[in-house]
Length: 500
Ligand code: NDP
Image (cartoon, rainbow, N blue to C red):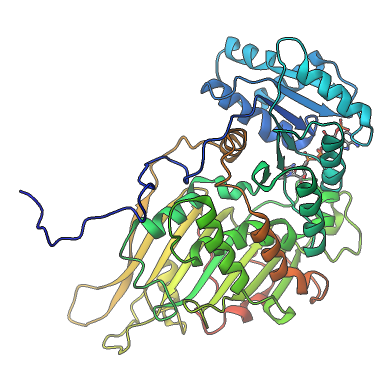
């Protein structure tokens, strides 16, 4: 039977955006014809990049040469041995032929990034007989202090023409350095050729935040200051700094995960619906959220440091670097004015998980008793501010969406408890974030990368507390961080601790 002519059909926002492509809409620029990996002998390349490139190769999505550039004095054969070790350690599987074919794509240039001869040697490798790459993608998996050196080196050697640059995190260590780095990058590359990595943005569960919010109608009426009482995001790790003391001492939790990953999650959760699916439209709405976010003040931040951190290698014995931080944010927008956003992350916490909890206001009149609540979040029900329904979005390790509603417990009395309706992600084989990011950058698709405006707006939020803050308070490994953080969520149901 034909649908009633009065019924409203689901429709695309604007003509021309109906294409059901998997990524956000963008033009189709030329695909890069080589991938240059600066930092090819480093830790990130070893742990993540070679396995990701091999997975792309297996799917037939990487047929271009991959040229590693680093200072280790290696031959091609030694470079390939190192890559083989990386594949072995990651247990990537695949046949021996597949692995050999992949390794044959790898080439190596040894040299110091501070020397122009290194870039000349790279040019030689790109143009070498049979390759003649003209549109390379340069991926900078190198110490951040060298980002400007390499970008300028590429420009001076004429290797930036028709090329792309993919910049690892962190993009700056404060607002001024981010602006400076943006300026250097824009001297050499146009904005649409600059790909700033925030690998969180390419995780399936994070991509699903955008989809879940704007592919469903039921959320929108609730998704505002009238019905949402608070939002919490916890990014917990049950391990320490894993020997990366040198890196962590110059970063700390706020710079390492809050300014980038966690503020991006807030932006996705808080943004208005974009006018269409283009990257520009989505980025513009995310930027508006960050722009409306109140810059942090020291009383809205609690910093912590796990006991034993100062004994780690390359950590100062009197280090005040935070391995934990908890913050209270406010977004001064029409939709979110007055709603606190609690964000927390830490190392050596009881579990490894990332979870969002959106608490809804209680019904305006309380007809029933909440006393029989039990278990999990429902057990908080007696705590002020937590008796309302909630939406729980588990982002990792496994993606899950749970909507909690109160249901009556059988019996004479009208009391009940929160029960979750759960949508669990059944997909077990997820493409790794780096596979997605590297293949997107080579294809010129910017949708999963951070835009200059958003990066700077996020720095503006954390800038006031980068230096001006309370001391990092000691907490026991395996605990949920310093008790002082509880004051932030007091009156809002307390912190919700994701279960293992
Ligand atoms: P490493 O210190 O392990 O590697 C640095 C790389 O840069 C090495 O290949 C090194 O070459 C090369 N290098 C350094 N200085 C020079 C120079 N002057 N000339 C030529 N080559 C040079 O760093 P990571 O791999 O840990 O990190 C790289 C980037 O990735 C950083 O921006 C980091 O923030 C980011 N990152 C890292 C993660 C990780 O888990 N490691 C996670 C997320 C992001 P050689 O060793 O041959 O001297």
